[in-house]
Every structure is written in structure tokens, then in C-alpha cells.
Length: 505
Image (tube, rainbow, N blue to C red; front, side, top):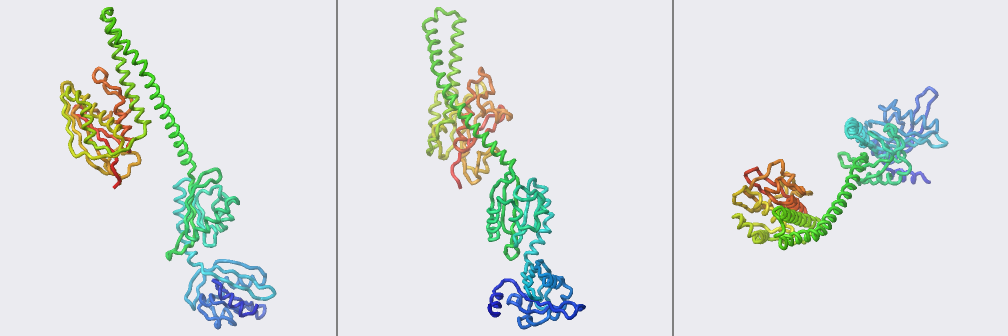
């Protein structure tokens, strides 16, 4: 190839390139290096034109560089015919440039010349220095956060920093063994393909978050670029954390939830079937009791009549319990029939259903308008609020006349008390429907207990009931994405607050 074509080819290189010839004037003379060729990038980096460089001795052009290790490396390469590569810091007086260079020296066969190519790696060196300065932070981070590791990969795809636990991804378990090695050479063969892609694309600006398995462990991994002040990518950071224990706990929790859900379904199915099947023999017990009293009353003494009455009373309580269990089971198993529920109409209907009890108790129920419309299953919501009003009518001091007040307001998700609905969104608006009474009240230590199945705070002789009503109200509220809270004081009445989602703001 003609010399001018060689020159044009070299001028297109991003590296600065010089060809030095070793010249000696006797054995005692120090070596001299004559510049035989220079490319355009070398001109720019050295601050000299090609005419000023070619044919000149290096010590004339760069007198302050005498004794620099570069000249020793060039002489050794030419005399031993062995190339070399190293990073050197060099100050160029003409251009005022003080920079780090990656210098490669390749001897030319059958000559006393060597090709010296150099690339400015100052920004990379600065980034590396910053990382090394931050290594204390990395070490502290690695020791503070268990099972965590950090690896920094430089522009030449070599490991510049490694710290923390080194998992089965790498060929060595000692972080120090990775320093200076090409990243893909430091990892196990089976991972090379994927990791070459991760590192290459990270240097293109991509970030990767993923979970993987190495050495029998599960790891969360981040691979992403490190940029300098100018926004240029100078390194790639690999951060990984052992999440095996958390993953196993999560899997165990999910399995437990599946098992619990299955058990709940089985229990609800059993409760429904058992309750339904118990109704027929219970009807027979009540019918036979009625027949005994109707046909054989004259043959029964006082004790016999009392036994029949007790049997009938027990059958009635059993019937009430069965109906309550069936109602609770239906709330759990029946899909919601969503509609827009007008609460004023709902409470009017409940008062009509309870008209006889209201009159008997001389109760006064006050509905304070306006009440909002809420999305939901009308039958279930009727069951919820009818249970609350029935309880308010029931749990009164002897001789007291019930006073029940129903009101509502719209609140944000952040105002839904101390026990918000699961997955509550602060942007969601809720209808807070309050049912307040002047009854006997509830002790604070029982606020959570009353919503559990079969919980009764009073004996049957004082107040009837099955202990299922409030559990049903809570389940209905939760079915609708809401919740129910209680505020009460013994002897001063109770307020139940039902929260039902209305819309997202």
C-alpha cells in the first residue's frame, strides 16, 4: 500500500498514532527516538503539526519528558520485539494538556521502529478514582446490607471494583480476584452470553432489573450505566442482593394463603350444607313439640310442659343460629350483584321491616340527609345496616327508649381511621355512614372481638343473639372494598362507622 494511503487510513483512527525509530550514537549514548510518522489525532493531542513532528527527535520536541517511563517501554519493545500496554499520566507542554492515556506499543518487524498509539482515558480514570474513593461507602454498604455485592465494570469491560459477597456467578469467591479482569472472563461460562448482552447494552444506556439464580441462591440484580458530569457513560455498575430467604418466605406465605383460602371455602361449604341439612330435622323437632302441646297437654304435668317449652326454646335458638350461619355463608360465597344503592331508600325499607319492633321499643330513628348513593350489592348492604339497627334496638338498658341517628359524609382514603380497607388508595373517596345509638355501650378492649364469629359479650338471658351478626356486617363491608369501625363507651352509647368506596378523585 502506498505511503499516502497508509497516512489516510491512520488519519481516520480515533487514537493518536506515532511511529518512533530508535537511534543510538554509540553504546554510551542515551537512546534517541526519531519520529517517522504521525496521524491527525496525534497532531491534535500533542499540539504540533505533522510537519513539526515528522523527522524530529522526541527529546527536542518534549525536553521535559526525559527519563519518562514511556521511552524505556519503547526501547524495550523494539529491542525485545515484544509489545506492551499501560496507562500513563502525561503533561504536554505545547497544548497544555495533562491527561491519562492508554498507551499501546507494537514493534515493527525487521526494523528499529515501533508504533505507539494512545487514547485519552482521563474521564474514565476520574470515574475510576471516584469509585475507588467511594469504595469505603461500598464496603460499608456491603457490610450493612447482608448478602449484597457491588461490581463496577470500566470502559474496557474490565472489573474496576468488586465488593461484598461474590455469588456463584463468578469463577472466584474472592472479590480481589476479579479486579483488572474482563468481566465476561471473570464469570462462569454458562452465564457469559446473557451477561455480555447486559454489559454491552448498559454501556449503550440501558438499565436492567431482574431476578436470577446462581449457586443455589436467588438474586435481585441491577445493571446500569454510570455517567460523568457531561452525561457520558464511563462505567457500568452491577448491584446484586441475595433474596432467597425473602423469596422462600413469600412462597410460603402464598402457599399458606392458598391453603387458608381453600380451607375457608371448605368451611363455608360445610357450614352451608350442614346448616341447610339441619333445617329439616329441626323443623320436625319443632313440629313434634307443637303436637305434644296441642294433643297431649292434658296428659303432661308441670314438669312435662316445662320440658317441652325448653325443647321448643332450644329449637328456636338453633333455628336462629342456622339462619345466621346460612346468611354468613351466603355473604362469603354469593357473587356481588353491583348496582347504585340509594341509601335513603335503603334505610326507609329497613325501618319498614322493623316497624313492629320500633313501635314496641318506642324507638326514634333519625336519618340526617343527605345520604349519598354508593355502588354495591343492595341485598348485602341491607343486611349490613339492618344488623346494626337491630343491635341498636336490642342492646339497651331496661326501660330505656332507643334513640338511633343515621348520618353520612364523604371522606378521603387518608381519613379512614386506624384500620383502613386492604389496599386503600389515598385518592379514593369513601362514604362514611354512621349508625349511633344511646345503648349500653361496648368496652374498648372488646372493639376487635365483637367482629369475630360466635362472639357474645352478654348471656342469653340478658340479650338474645347468635354472635354472628357483626361478623356478617364486617364481611359485607370488606366485600365492597370498605371496612367498619366502632367507637363506644360503656353506658354512653355506640357509634358504628361503615366506610364504602364511592369513587377515585
